[in-house]
Length: 165
Image (cartoon, one colour):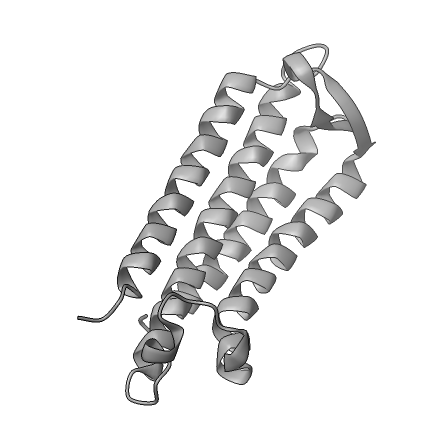
């Protein structure tokens, strides 16, 4: 992982928070924040509450993923669970293994931030309709894209930590 990757992630989080904070003013005072079958709104909060919650959620989730994949493995290596653990965490290969886990974590955090911004944009779009209705097809497409990226990241990690030989 390059030294700039955490800076790129931090800049992305700042941009995501700015997007949410900057575009939320177009939302009504009571924001539909949860949608059920058919994209019908079934959960609401105030616009200010939504802004505060969603911006905090973006930061919190990014920090959790980042800490779990960068700081935690270096401080508590017994918590690392990768295929062929004994081989890859041998002192001769440990630094490279930790770099691979950090790279995975930063990529996952970036994908998560992109997902959360996309969901916010879908909420904005939902409020363009009366009553507010989520575009389910688009939502499931965005979610499917995230799951696809996640599957690729996991596959790359499994390949990276495959059995030696």
